[in-house]
Length: 212
Image (cartoon, rainbow, N blue to C red; front, side, top):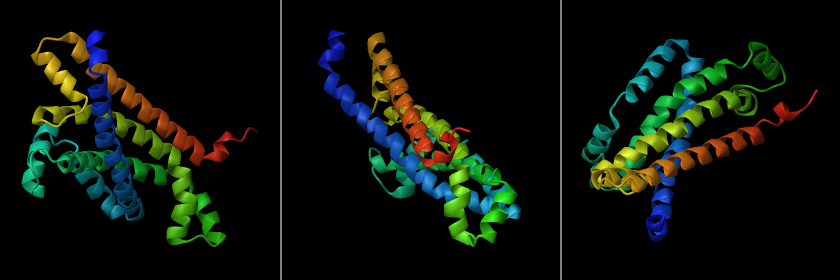
């Protein structure tokens, strides 16, 4: 515990970096996945193509993608942009199907009723379909958040500082406490993301809190 108290500043700093590298791509990925998921659901001929391509993106090994990003983006190997872009790709890959399935779960009767009330196109999507799809999308975001926290740890292998640093350094130094700090830090961060997403879903779906 003396080691923990001596390095608490570094632990908190790396935890914040880890949160940014995991959380920012989660939000950006959701923004990108929403129109892609809507397109996949709206145009059935494109559904298979969009879902297949997004699924293939997730099969790219994370370490390989982190190394490839500087070549594609023209950035330095330790530039944070590499991790942000890579994690956004993984997030989109996970959320496109979730968004499409969430929108597909909205009953046709509800869509027809909304159309009859004057809600059409983008207005119907924003005011009716998207809110009803929130529980499904939130469930997918919880999975993506945990996945992001886990994958970001791999970035320590290319020298980018975050909680994964304690895993690699602790292993190299044969120092179990440091490894334990890295593992617990990742678990707590994933739990915080999960709680935040649950709270956001709860706030966005007030009708589910109405007791009959």
